[in-house]
Length: 490
Image: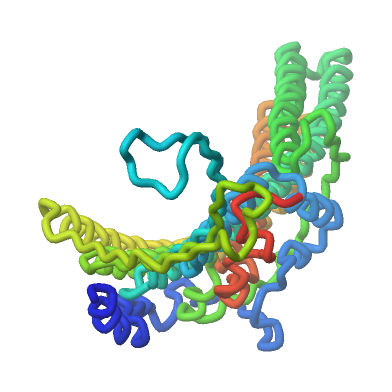
């Protein structure tokens, strides 16, 4: 009678498919109409309005391409993130399993003797053999399982976005380190040319001293300047080695396994980078996608917490065999079955634990919304910072190029005047130092422009967009019929 009453009470709810908690709505974010720092930025052509998946190829550097192709397979941080994503997929599979009934098989052997005076069908010492199949199922009356599946699916999608964000960050770091190494190579070449020029000047000064038209102090100053330039060239070797070691680790190799030949040439022109409009940034950055999916996870967990307020129902059934004769264990005469018990459980008093859990879920949702909005703001800031830096550095490069030309012209005139004996060696040293400083600054600024170009690409999402996130089926991972078994099948 009780089972019939409970069935009449729960069946309509089961058929209606009640689901507790709010349905997910993507939170709003403040999005400007245009980027503040776009003024003066030369946009790419409309046909090139998005970055390619292999964005590094726009720099046209074969060695950079080869290094970045090795990141996906070699980087150990990415390998760890991929394992964490698979772990998140398996959590979805675990949540989906709650939709299905659980089943088990039992077997038993008993040897017994009835107590004196006990009314039993048999007397004396007997063996009792039994086996049974037990099935139990807890219907998802209030949508707790559905919300948990929804939460774990969103969490797996967030994990996929985290993986992509780490991949992009690793690629950008490698490209920036690579361009810094190339800038060091260019500075090394500049210093070697400077050392050769200083050696010529020293030879001239020694000859002038030998014939008595230059002072001994001029020779000493020329030697000092030459050795200082050599020391600078040697010092760059330390930084270059460190950059090369960092590149090796990023592609999953030991530093001893990577040796990059020196290349003094830096790209003279930077590639055009399509920026687009601010609203598209919400779809293009994996860290924003991660934050948004975490909001969806927190929203679904509110439903899980609300469903805990309501009663649960467990249905069970048993089918088995029992006999005192082992040879007749699986005969129909030994068969028995049972339906039930149908158990309903409803916690009426828990000291406010469930209420606290619901409030905690709501607070977690509020925190995730704030974090999402902060991530969006940070994304806009990074784009604006990169645009501003690139525009400023472009102007600085133009000014430095003029300064280099002027310093070289001044140096040529001063050297000729020194040879003619109309100026002192101090004038030559001043002109040489100015020329070297300006040329080193020009190389450094070009390296910075390349680095900020990579930074802008990273800030724009590196050619990724939300359509690359796994859907609910992909978030659950690959599975087969063997996955429902409680033991692995190899």
